[in-house]
Amino acid sequence: MAGDGTEELRTGLAVRGADGRRLGTLVGLEAGALVVERGFFWPQRFTISRSDVGVVKDGEVRLLGGAALRETHTGAPLSEPLHREEAAARETSGAGVREEGDDVRVPLAREDAYPLLRMRDVGAVRVRKVVRTELKQLTVEVRREELVVERLPVQPGAAGAPERTAGAFEEFEQVIPLWREDVEVVKRAAVYEEVHLKKAVERRTWTEEVPLRHEVARVEEEGEAQMVVDDTRPDPHSH
Image 1 (cartoon, rainbow, N blue to C red):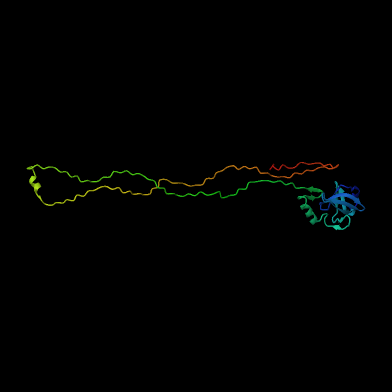
Image 2 (cartoon, rainbow, N blue to C red; image 1 turned 60 degrees about the vertical axis):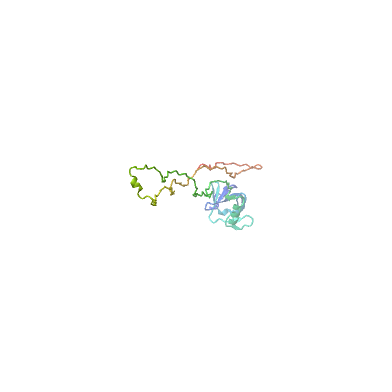
């Protein structure tokens, strides 16, 4: 099958290995070899022997299994068209720009914002009891005994006069107790009110405008270069 379809070889065809992996684009034909180029910003060229061509159809060149890839200038064999170390360096350079086959992928980033709730101490409320003294006026009626002495004249010859003279000229002493009411103030504690303490959660809406950045791709034509823009990108807000 090495010679099948070799007359159809022309530049611009895609070149794939036996496993279907794209190796690059056919950019030239030399004596007994195909010149293949891979990469966009960092192109690399290598050659493939015509004897390793399996079939050419559908705008692609399919290689046989075990096809040898060689450096264009030195002819040294290549295990891969692009070394892994070099590919990694190119992927990390240029703001993440990387190559996949003949395609160059430029990632566009944008910032997003979301609220993050954190609990923080805003203070404390201290509750304590304070003793205050107020003056209260108490009014109560109190009684006391007093000795009332009355002197009444006695007429001579009046009834009972002899009995009244009994004990005359004798000393006499009589003790009559007198009483009075005193006021004693007695104080006692009584609960007149209760204070209930509890926490309530207040809900309110927080709003703030946050500036967010995003990247856009600008492609400019220079000279006679022409481009076709496919702007069928998905809507990021469609989810």
